[in-house]
Amino acid sequence: MSAAMRIPLQPVEQLEREQRRRNSEVPELWTTLDRVMDPELPVISIWELGVLQNVELRGQTVVVTITPTYSGCPAMHTIAEDIQAALEQAGYPHREVITQLAPAWTSNWIGPAAQEKLRQYGIAPPQNADSGGVISCPHCGSEQVQAISEFGSTACKALYKCRDCAEPFDYFKSF
Amino acid sequence: MTMSTDNPVSQYAVRLADDALILGHRLSEWCSRGPFLEEDLALSNVALDYIGRARMFYGYAAELSGDDRSEDDFAFLRDCRDFGNLLIHELPRGDFAFTMARQYLVDVHSVAFMTDLQSSTDATLAAIAGKAVKESNYHLRRSRDWMLRLGGGTEESHRRLQHAVDELWGFTPEMFEMDELEKSLAGQGVAVDVSRLQPAWDTEVRATLAAANMSIPEEDWQVSGGRQGKHTEWLGHLLSDLQFMQRAYPGLEW
Image (cartoon, rainbow over all chains, first blue to last red; front, side, top):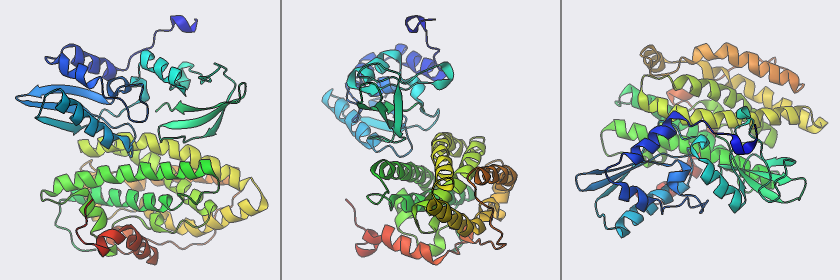
């Protein structure tokens, strides 16, 4: 089966997250938070990354639930602040950001569209080896790649090199 | 150890947090001192995973404490006798072989431990374990790889690694000991029964050591006491470094 025909199987938590957004009584709040991008990966939003779990209006207070990627991810603090700033700008003075640990974040929640954005930005998107995923160079597309280090510019990325075009690139780890 | 009046689950969370904080600190000591750049980054990132783990466990303990203690109070305002971490975590970083040998011995334990903790009847501990186990699997892949590379490398790397294993071996039994607190919590399904993890740990470690041409140390000594606040001399030095700012400027915030 060619890559163009592969339909990825969605994890249950991802389906539930999308349902929460689709059935939300405050769709405009979700849209507002689409402007909050990952501080280290400025091309994808916290929604696309799978960090944004829920947005609700409880009385006058906007309650945003996020989940951390890695335990020690230092960007989570910035993300929480950016959420506050985005809501402030949109005119919501009463806000609360809650961090939820379960279900545990997984890179499987990054959908195909977001994966393509990562690739365009120069980061190889996460590949699930079990489902036949192969890491390829985001610059030239070659699969002749070599892992240089398990940790790249951030904890969530590994450092790779392409043996064909000799360029280094970050790989967003499958986690 | 100063008798804690905190609830048992909180005490347990603090022990697990102490393990993570102390080992995280030791790993962070490699920052800017790594053997080469990629490894410097790797060790720093593993340290970061541990600090994150410590924050989650301390945060939970602070929540359970019911008073206004924060995660920082637990980390920075307690002295040696109050820390409940296992001794193996506080040993100095030593040379690179020592760090990776210690990391490997701990990682095999961590993966099994966190896998089990995911089934804890305490939802928060289970959630933290759910995140920790993924990272520990990653750490184990790295540390096992280094055991093989150093063991099967040069004469010097082999010698250093064997020396490290000989020094560390007596500190490993403590990872499988349980006191009354843990036995009680394990009985309630909250804590992990670490005594059951020992056989599988032993089998896996021996297989790796064999693959790395390492011999099992013949020494028959073992040390424990960490959970009771009885630590090696190293913890004092570590805490004086870690807690320096709070000790020099009590109440400092930024």
